[in-house]
Amino acid sequence: MTQSPPPVRRGRGRRPADEVRREVLRAAGELLLAEGMAGFTVEKVAALAGASRVTLHKWWPSRGALALEGYFSVVGPTLAFPDTGDIAADLTTQVRAFVRLMRDTPAGRVVPELIGQAQTDPELSAVYRERYSAPRRALAVEALERARERGQLRADVDPEVVVDQLWGACYHRLLIPDQPLTEEFAEALVANLLTGIARPRPAGSRR
Amino acid sequence: MTQSPPPVRRGRGRRPADEVRREVLRAAGELLLAEGMAGFTVEKVAALAGASRVTLHKWWPSRGALALEGYFSVVGPTLAFPDTGDIAADLTTQVRAFVRLMRDTPAGRVVPELIGQAQTDPELSAVYRERYSAPRRALAVEALERARERGQLRADVDPEVVVDQLWGACYHRLLIPDQPLTEEFAEALVANLLTGIARPRPAGSRR
Image (cartoon, rainbow over all chains, first blue to last red; front, side, top):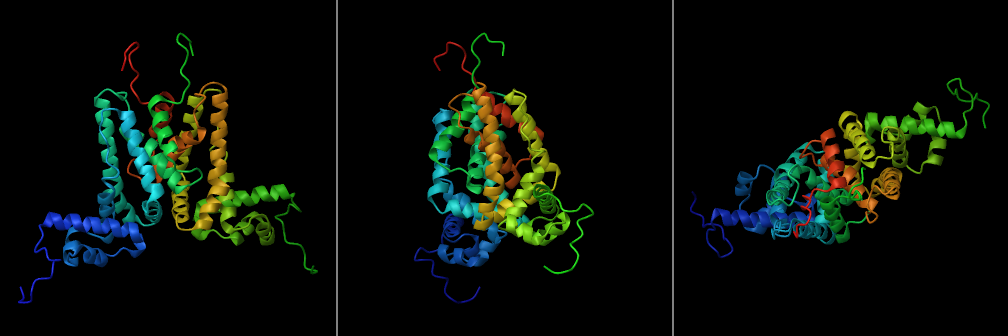
């Protein structure tokens, strides 16, 4: 230890580690959304959060890991899974919120760039999956499993496949914008998947 | 015109324009699959097809347009839509073929790179949609509309949404490989969407 005074911590004294961690993640997520990966540096996050670069390097193994975990943290409240007990309503609410996030905020520009870059950057691809897409997928699967346990989904449905048919369908329109990403689209995704698109056979018909 | 002899045309004399066009497209598609966009040049395609660069530049406005139209042309037979009259069987056959193309051939490496690069390259994005994804989408929509006209799909189903819930779901696993792209996945996509994932209510139940 030296005799120099401790760094000024914005007048708040020494913050508990979990508070620093939360503030760093928020700063990281906001910086990613503001500047994309091109303008994202550990130094800027440290300055924004009033934390030390050494701490950040200790907690996150790479710039990408910090950026993606920060993004996961800032979009979490927007993308929360409601649990009213009505799976159709809850899925519609959540998928509409996801569509609005992609359509109306910088996430709709930053996320396609990240996924695009990940196609030729194995390290970014691994970090994207580890710190963002896999944990988000796990939250969706949990919500679907709760609905299945309540008897609202068929017992033989694989929730992992459902994730691709709801959020994956949205990513498809985001990445290959042949058709628009709208709230009506979100509603149609849930309605199609829950009730099926085949015309019901008349009672008593053989086929 | 000079007095030099005409270029050797592989002993076949002057070919009709539509034959040249077909051979150029095949050469372009095969070159793209072999080398990706990084190794794709109009010069190489011209040499492979025994055609002139001038002709190629006249017919295709850009290197990207030639590559994508060539790719559309070479995968066409593999990705044809069978029409046996049974939409469930036909969709399953087609989506499984798509999964095998992405899993077992160089397309599974080249296509994600193209989509990835398109996220930050507006010209490639436009060409990808114009020469590949929009025409492929149109073929799928036609197949779904035929099934709807036969009364196999509900009259209020939007085929454009179905495209995202079948092929879009596959692209999602291709681009963000949290879960594997398998033939079982292809089958589950079609089964989920046709019959729905909600548990049917017992007859006479109020909810």
